Length: 275
Ligand SMILES: Nc1ncnc2c1ncn2[C@@H]1O[C@H](COP(=O)(O)OP(=O)(O)OP(=O)(O)O)[C@@H](O)[C@H]1O
Image 1 (cartoon, rainbow, N blue to C red):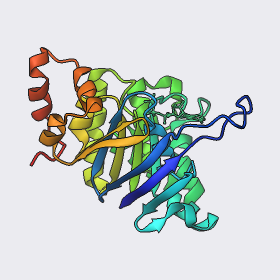
Image 2: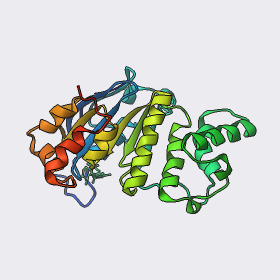
Image 3: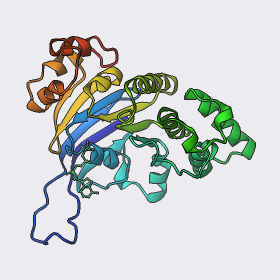
Image 4: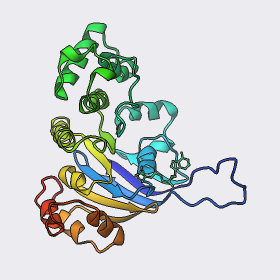
């Protein structure tokens, strides 16, 4: 479904930088793939390049080198018109559910926005579609006229998810999408994401610092460190045995009832294919 081939990226130097000053690569030869209907958990410490890779995959940050293939089509070689058509298949949910929405809009307007941009529905059809989307994410069609301040963080993240699935995309980049929620709400949203994936055949790139959350939802796990993929595994057991310092440090940062139980907790989690 998605193939990233040897992507390298450097941000343009700001004006304050001297021209001669060399910029480090934010992404260096990154390759990965996500099969249809599966989830890749992308872990890594702060500044590793995860969100930049997410933006490259979404078509928002043209890389300096490499390719992003969506169902075999090179995203950055398409005409603007073809890219716009493909962009409807690529959606994103960010960590900060509040800044991701216009505070003056109603839930109906927020969720209806992609439908207005891409579909030609009548007012009644769009209202019905928004009502169904609200119900899909565990809210009610009666919430349609509420504004963001009238929702809790967890509810507002459901609105963001409803907007992301409105066009029945192929791939959703979930950039720390549960990281600002408390444990109970985070777990509920992860369950919801699992249900939606099964119902609509979605693929996810699940970007996170949270190894527990990644193990819960992902079929394969990758770790980025300093712009490179340093671990990539579709077996949770093998992933947990990795000797790479970036993986060890993620595991060490995980809080458990007792440090001795960390491996057992992760190994018992559903999600990552654990053959
Ligand atoms: N728009 C930008 N312009 C210049 N540099 C940037 C920009 N966005 C990110 N960077 C730099 O690129 C590097 C990677 O950032 P990125 O946000 O991709 O990492 P990350 O792994 O997602 O980190 P975090 O987990 O903290 O969000 C960092 O050094 C960051 O400062």
